[in-house]
Image (tube, rainbow, N blue to C red; front, side):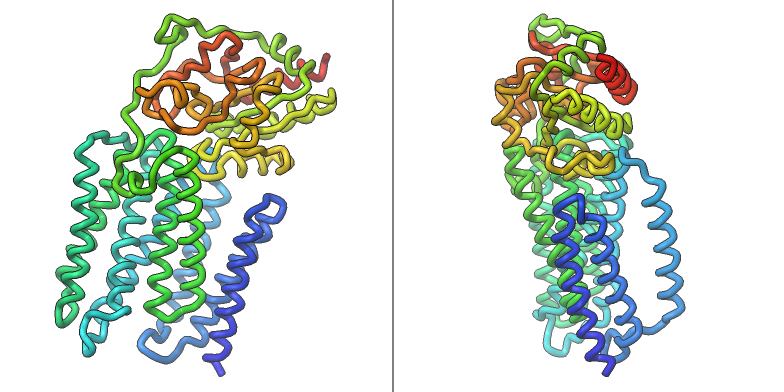
Length: 466
């Protein structure tokens, strides 16, 4: 009876995962979808503990498991409650890394118990080795990504890393094949495999930086899903398998889409030959002698109030200033003056996939006003004014005009085609890619320096008083 209840619970959990993932596609249902998926996972864990009592992987030590669940839940809840939106990418990397570490630990613990009576060329051995390799790479890569996002680790740029990473990748495959050709489990070689995978996880993320970072986070997320799916194969656990496949496939699809959005190849991501060397930072005067022109808040408010179509382009600076709520307030103040306001969303704006979408959804910005890059670019020539809030590399025309630029070929939001451009920044400091932004020095661009939240509050006040 317990076996049947266990199988039924796995089916229910899998259905909840699928529906939860589907509901994440829209902000109005995302929170409910998250809860559905969490309930499915809780159901799978509970029924596994209660009913998985037979076979090689029978569940014991219930008190230790319960203690681990309680401790993990409390720590996760406290982290989620306290995290700021600016640190959300780091937390995503941290949680993702923990998933990879769990998959790797499962492989390390289960490998000595493999039944080698039928040889080592079995699906069970392959699942263990794949889970260890992918989980370790995901864990170490996520640790490095966390450090880079938090400003604790700098990029390491060298053309030789492409060949080093390729050598590590070939070594991983060779060591895995060697282990499977042995007559019995070889724990020493397994630890060698884990060490090489850990080094590769560090090596392939270290050279990646700038606007490429969101793609790496998405890729590492898909790795963790694949590693979890390997655990599902190992334990013959349908819920674990389904969850891993969903995460792995969704992460892979998102990675491919983001690579296309940045004009990069997935192969270059895996080999670490991704992005270019950063150029020097810009100043008040551009490389060709052009001067960045400032605007007063009053002048900007006049232009915005009497415009017909305005596009707000958010970036990481909006998250740093925690200005999403006042930005929405400005949008509503302009809407009261019959100004059509939309948001131009670049697929890699911020530090993780969907960062700007999440940030603006938190401020209750209607989802229909968030327009993807491809669609918003079509309307730029008819746009009266663009308000760039904290974005930098994703609006840099050098991506289209300068073959020597590290971001050349990356699709951008073509803010330079709008009739007027206002850029809110603290200073002329370059963006995450570390290069000068040509848009700052365009004739129709006006800079408004200061904290984005404070500037937007003053803009709201000026607009309301007109």
